[in-house]
Length: 208
Length: 242
Image (cartoon, rainbow over all chains, first blue to last red; front, side):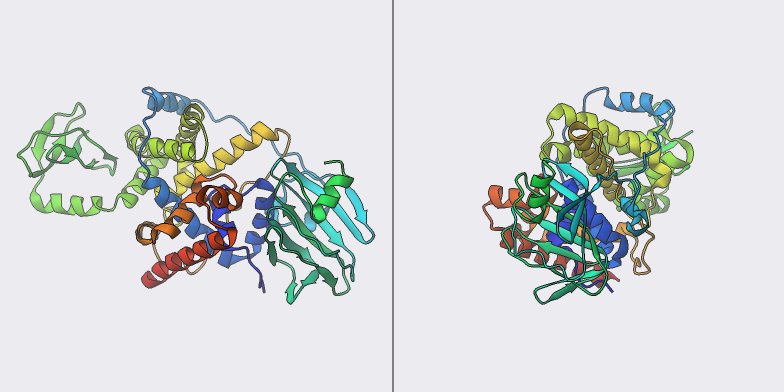
């Protein structure tokens, strides 16, 4: 039973293609297991269609249609198969199958991080924390999204288990703690160029 | 091969062939204010007017443009119908281009991606599922994905990221996509200006959270609460119908 979802703002930005890619990975992981949020995304996409339909047209170049029809005649280019990473495959939802991974790096006792993606607008990766591990109180620039893949953690009054997505806004300090007896595996992403939060530690350690 | 042609005082409406293909025509000569439907040959000569009852039925089918565009995409899928594609192209390509320019692309890049989007419409027409989305929504998502891909190639040429997943439809999809699309469009048009602004910004502004705050001068908390209100209204509008 999924109890924690991304905000409408985050889902709409995802549906509009405006969420930074790193954050989009976390949302994709959550959507795979959450029918309610898929429904919201479908609605947001319908809004996108309606918004586009209502836009004033901008003239295309004179020969645009002829160019496209000429290209349509040619056979479709073959798409090269994706190169596969290895590792946490079995725990990852299929939308993340195609991601390539960096190596596991220990970033603190009981805490390791494996980079999946780093761009100028954010960093995403897998974070694994051992049972009982308490992360230091921290805050960050930009939005931080975390989707639990296995195990669980508690943050304030909320408990996050597999499928749950934790959305923490800029400057909102929090102090997650792994509960239960198994390690907690999450996909986590933060936006922003300079990272101050937990991933900032990872970023500095990894020389990102 | 013949076509049907409809026009009101030179304002072009739709044109429907017996084979189910719909075209947009040029103006037809007629009496001021009169509605004329009739058959046309390949070179556009008006052959004969259509009997009124039949014309009425055609017209009713044509008042839902979302349905018509869906039929056009299916015509492209079924028989590589270039005429149907031309209608889709003339309607959607200029709007996709505007959307991409609002999202920050320059005119040249927007033109290129709009052409790319329409090429995908041609190639992927068989994947279009009218039960899942309206034509506009489907084409919007194609343009969105191509924009993300182009952005990725430019900045992270060696990073592989997955496409958004396609899941089976839920049992609660009782409304046809056409109805849903029309209802959503209506509900968006009815939103208070401050909410509509935030909703549109989600599709135009890169990095909306920070950017909306900066460009619209609205604090992040307010952005999120306005969007939540707007989405609640849209959900309610859809539930009314179910």
